[in-house]
Length: 242
Image 1 (cartoon, helix red, strand yellow):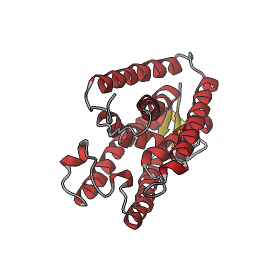
Image 2 (tube, helix red, strand yellow; image 1 turned 180 degrees about the horizontal axis):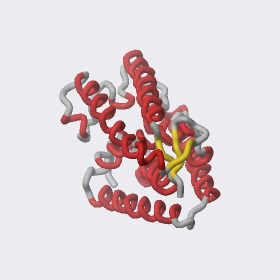
Image 3 (tube, one colour; image 1 turned 90 degrees about the horizontal axis):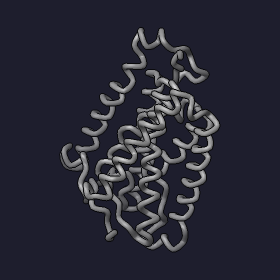
Image 4 (cartoon, helix red, strand yellow; image 1 turned 60 degrees about the vertical axis):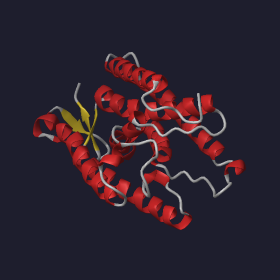
């Protein structure tokens, strides 16, 4: 491994293929009852401990050169939210993991911006474990377990994204940093390059995400889909009838 992982190289394509296979297997196993709630919660606790440990490690004093590394990238939030979704099945965690994990997180899987700073093997493993699980979990919860996002969940995601963007852009402006790529697209290339220069790509991305999230909601919110599901304790979700 060099100082930066090569996008679309052998390592990248191999790990994406592995994630696709694990996604298909895990979804099948949950639907067939081979993976139960206890196993999923165990994975959730593993992810939570790993996420918090990695967060603490990334904020160690030796990393403070040039400013305190803050957990403001969306992936920092998503790791913890995804873990909580597995552990608690709280509606807000499930819908945020669904919308963020299958769109913004997917961008990281397809066009990873992974630069190594101290231990390439560990950084490679952590990057792909966290982003891979954040992609797999919402598919398992929605297709495998049968948790269906509602239009209220869609609205919550839009609001939550605006809150994250507002906080992060404020910090970016004050510290002269670029958390979340809200002040500039990644050097390695991404879908943002197709959306115009900064800051216009932010408006384009927001519009595209709103449309995509609406499309992701619609199949679960039709009258026919509602007849095949029942209300969940959270208004952000419904539960499919088996």
